[in-house]
Length: 119
Image 1 (cartoon, one colour):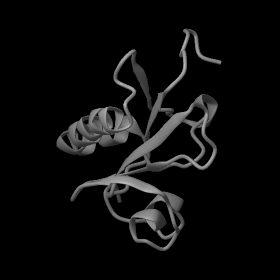
Image 2 (cartoon, one colour):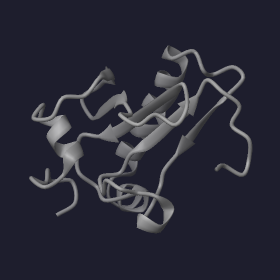
Image 3 (tube, one colour):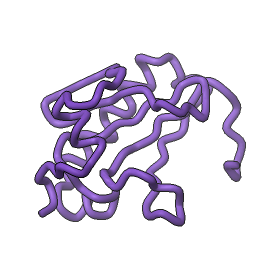
Image 4 (tube, one colour):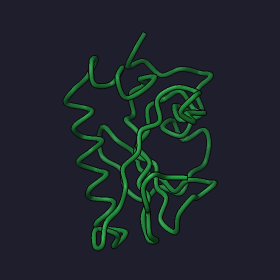
């Protein structure tokens, strides 16, 4: 069921402190931590503590929690000093888009030029 922790989910285990992570920000509803395979000088993941498979599942099931994820993403960007000249917030949705952990997460990427299209 959406919102419930899953025993087979890496990010649920991070939320439960069963797997270590370098946490940079935490609220009652959201955790932000450094990506273990950074793709930019600043690469932080922002996840809801509740389990939702992807961004669409989160938006449909808990829009206020989706807003929390985005708010904390902005706070992390400011904390990491990447708001100027800019940063990217990315939600990969589905394996074909590169989602490898099926617990919704926003990637905060910054600290280098992020030209479009990515890749």
